[in-house]
Length: 119
Image (tube, rainbow, N blue to C red; front, top):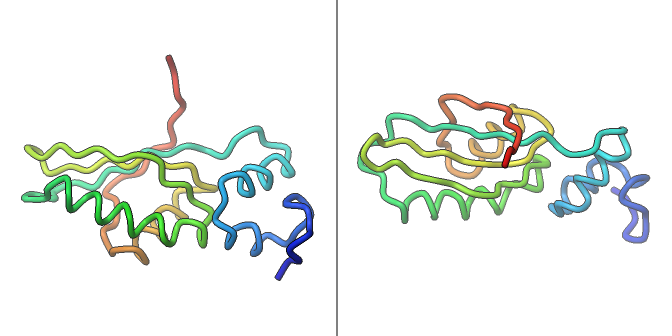
């Protein structure tokens, strides 16, 4: 484990990820020569009957474990009619998002897309 006073860039990776701070994860990516962590949109299909309150509860569970996997879950949307949930996050890779969802609530994405923000 890293020491509390250690720089986010020089502290061991496990300390940065366990800290759960978006600043620490971004510092790690800067230390690798990358400007920003990749951003992803993951899609959960065939969730018929799901309500916004259900998605809010699942998102709260995601937030509790996100730091363990280096993920920063940001927003979510629900298409109730189609039973489709969309989750926006920053993460080191797609696998980290899947692992976080699996531990948090077991609802795995049908698809995950790396996305870039436009205006």
